[in-house]
Image (cartoon, rainbow, N blue to C red; front, top):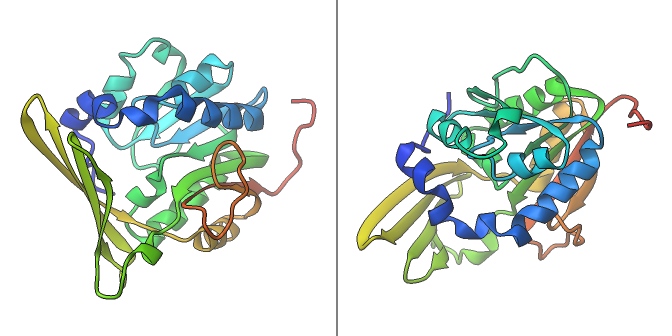
Length: 249
């Protein structure tokens, strides 16, 4: 079972600590992308959290369910308008089962890296495939590892530096593990949060998809379908499970 680092303190202040994630300019393209794939079908979110993506996707008419390891994040979701329309289950999204199949299974904002072993990440792909209808889609939003930003001998990469928030990553290249460290000033108090992650290259994720019976059908640099290149720092990848797609949906 992966470690749950998203406790009540993080759940209650999630939007305050990462306000950029809730900007409509960030949320709307992701919701539009997923809604187009789902069509009149259904969607399952791995790592649904407080519903940042699931709620507006549900408002678009897509029936959404979600899995999350953090009961605190799920409790926060249930306080949001429209949450009654979304089914949730507490558990590890690499292994937890929902009694349904879906048109789309998706996992956003680097959440695949919360699974800190390769075996767990492979199981996540298998779990996604098990929940997909034939021809359904598994979507992941993830960052491209920042190893080119590390000079020889350096293991630290800062990613946010401002008066309210300092964030840096501590890399162990041999194990593909990075510890993400955050320091916030909230109400004149210093808050500290660290979490482990296992980074993976897009090509490694493609192999995991093949193991699970899915093949890559799209890869973009962002939700707006900007072409993915060697300089892209993020990717949105879509794998398809074998089988016919219902064109009438």
